[in-house]
Image (tube, rainbow, N blue to C red; front, side):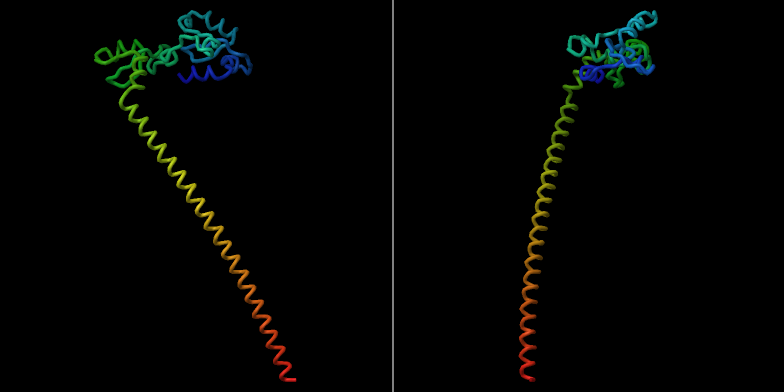
Amino acid sequence: MMDKRAIQRSEMMCNSCKINNKIKNAISWCTICEEAFCEQCDECHRSFKFLAKHKLVSIKEIQIGNSDLKISEVLSCEEHADKIVEVYCVDHSKPCCTLCATLSHRKCENVISIVKAATGIKQSELTTSLIKSLDERNTKISEIVENQKGNLAEVETATENMIKEVSTLKTAVIDHLGVLEEKFKAEMSSSRRTSS
C-alpha cells in the first residue's frame, strides 16, 4: 500500500541503475522484488527464467490508478521471500503466503484473504475505538494548546502592566526627589541668609 502511494506521488528512478550510479526513469514496478526498473532493466528482468513468475506493473498505470495492483501483491511473505502474502491467519494474527497457509496454518480454523482481513481491520470495533480515542486525545491536546496560549497571553499582559507600574513608580520617585532637592536648596539658601 505504501509503495503504491509512493509510486503515485513521485517520479520513480530505476533501482538497478541507481546501484550502478546511473540515473534512469523507471517504467515498471516488480511486485515481488519491490523495485522499479527502466526499459532496459525491465527487459533483462523478464528474460530470466527464475524471474518469469514475477509480476511487473507499468508505473504509468499505477500513477493514473488504472493498475490492478492489490495490497497482497506488494507484501512478501516473512517465511518465503519469493512468495507474496495472499492470506491472513486470524488464529495467529499473521499474514502469510499460500504455502505457509498449507504447511503451517492448515489446522487453523480462521484463514481469510488478505484483502478481506484489511477490510475487516478498517471496520473492526478496535479500529473504531482507536480512532475515537485518537480524536479525543487530539481534542484534549488542542484544548491544552489553547490554554497555554491563553496563559501566555495573561503572562504577557501581567508583565506589561508590571513594567508600566514600575515606570510610573520610577517617575513618581524622580519627581519626589526633585521636590526634596528643591526644598533642600531652599532651606540651605534660607539658612545662609539667616547666618549672614
